[in-house]
Length: 136
Length: 60
Image (cartoon, rainbow over all chains, first blue to last red; front, side, top):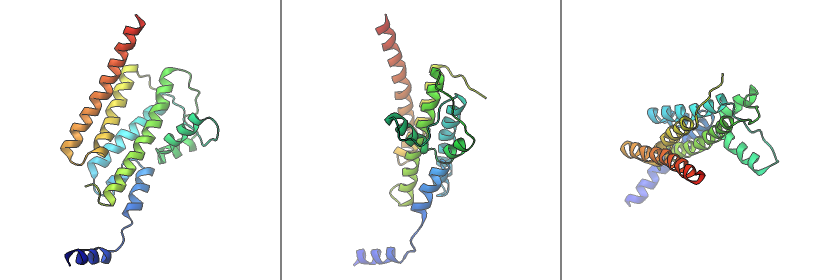
């Protein structure tokens, strides 16, 4: 009885768009998926952490991967970079990160940007879990 | 503008920011987030230092 009442109450609630909006916004701007759900500090920390890693990677003259169908490592690099969302799009638009990886620090920079994208994928999944109520 | 980090400072920055994200995304409560973040940071940096010393020993 109680279960059916709860189920009816849940069904009566309007469907929220948050499980779609939060991950999409979180992908575009790191941490925004948390901020839109009023997790201010977590969102700010994610924005600073992922944003700093990506920008440092660029400043270390790291290479950014474009969509490609060549070497498997290049494809994986592109997938990692893509996770950075808006930062990746802006970097491509201004033609940044196009240097050759000529020294060790530039290679670190390339990895910094890939890791920033991969960390943002994790942050997006976390924002989704908050939106569906799986996590507080 | 370019940045020239040393190998250690690059490892430090990487460990710091990756640990913050891991802490936030992998735990539920604030206390657990901080603890897990510190644990990840120690593992990242400790692992890099250990690997460095191991390579130094192999080289000798």
